[in-house]
Length: 156
Ligand SMILES: CC(C)(COP(=O)(O)OP(=O)(O)OC[C@H]1O[C@@H](n2cnc3c(N)ncnc32)[C@H](O)[C@@H]1OP(=O)(O)O)[C@@H](O)C(=O)NCCC(=O)NCCS
Image (cartoon, rainbow, N blue to C red; front, side):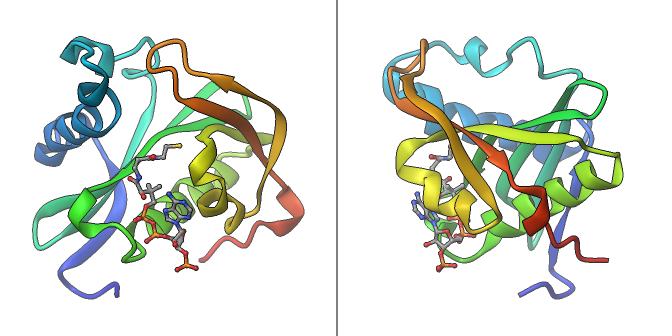
C-alpha cells in the first residue's frame, strides 16, 4: 500500500494535517457525546508526539504517543477516518508509533483501548492488563493494554 502517494510518520503541531487530526479526533471521540471541542486538547497534547498516515495529501489515520516519564510511553487517540477504516492505515500508524518508542528506549508501552477495539491492538502484541473501566468523559468502556515486548518486530 505504501507508494509515493502514501506517507506514514511523525507530524509536528504546525503540520497542516495536524488540524485535520484534531477535527477527526473530535468528530469520532467527543462530538457524538455532545462534548465541547476543547476537550480534544488535554494536558498531554503539547508534550506528545503525533503520527499520521497521509494519502494523496489527506489525513486518513492518526495516533498519539506520550512519554510520561523516561521510558514509559502511552499511545492514545488512535483514529482512522470512517471512510478509510479497514484498509490497514491504522496498523501502519500503530507500527510506526511502536517503532519510534522502541528506538527511544521504551521500557513500557501501554494504551487504554475501547473494549471493542482490543483485537486491533492484540494483532500488534498488546495484551489486556486490568479491568474494564468506563471513560470519565464519554462513559465508553476501556481496558488497559500493555505491549508484550517479546512480540515486537520493528521494521527497519
Ligand atoms: C480502531 C481503528 C483506529 C483501526 O484503524 P483501521 O485503519 O481501521 O485499522 P486497520 O485497517 O489497520 O485494521 C487492522 C486490523 O484490525 C482490525 N480492526 C480494525 N478496527 C477494529 C475494531 N474496531 N475492532 C476489531 N478489530 C478491528 C481489522 O479488521 C484488521 O484486521 P485484519 O488485518 O485481520 O484484516 C479505527 O477502526 C477507528 O478509528 N475506530 C474508531 C475510533 C476508535 O475506536 N479508536 C480506537 C480507540 S481505543
